[in-house]
Image (cartoon, rainbow, N blue to C red):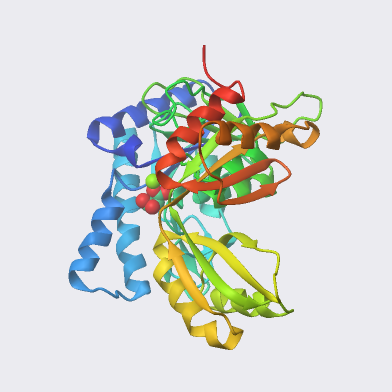
Length: 405
Ligand code: ASP
Ligand code: MG
């Protein structure tokens, strides 16, 4: 008998009909001889609606209260799914994150899970019930209700799967798996049967929209196999698993695109030790996540530092740079929100020369200018003009032989 954690995203529980379909699938999975734990997101765009509602009351809602409000979305779903199971004579019980034993830090609206005490969930399973857990939430060490950041139900599901030592964590969504590129951008994109954790992390970090980055990190750290699949077709989707050393890896498995970032350049900074340290310390103190960084080779003792941040952090990041500009002895701070990033990802890249050259040639042959470059051992990213990102993804998808027949 396998223990299966099934996470259902917002579209999968979007209305009464979808909720009934979910309950039927849970019942089927049980009939096949498995134990099932369900984790749910809020219905459809309910979380967005709640955020909008809070905004009508206050531009700066107290984070504790915002969390209290947002967790209501998942509570609605869990109760409805449990009711739908009862209709099918499947015994179940719903649990909030707090009741499920998810203990977090006190960082409201983006809390991190510290510990999980799934005693009640295990007891429910032992009693033959299907536990239905509200995703995206926990209780802090100070006993306040917290949320885990947007998309956080994935994290709940992986964390619960790990705590219960589940055989698989199935992530049900409105797409049939992970694709070689966003099918809305590349019509010839292919579904991938299997992706390694490392590849999936790079994809999630560079614009792949299927899974939240933190959930993949968590799954990798705890060795929880993930299976991303559709709750509309129920067909097998994409497995995300440990890299299999006996297998030949795809040189390039996927191409991602991302236009959610903007670039800041601090120009004319003295080329001496400590300047970058001070700049990025200030940004870190403001809680701003920096992504790509490029520092030009200094000329005449001066240099430029460019970096990218989420567009939502652009104003705060620019203000922060302007504030430290004089201390750094910098000449100017400029920003550019017309950038986009295209990345190629593949575990086989490690052992294949020529991948970088082919990427750059493909972009250059199509008149796409590269503005910044960053690499990891299994990824190459280029910043280009935002309006060329779609073309860049399509040309690279073809160049690396990923187009479906
Ligand atoms: N409902 C939350 C959100 O929309 C959490 C989730 O869907 O995973 O961000
Ligand atoms: Mg969601």
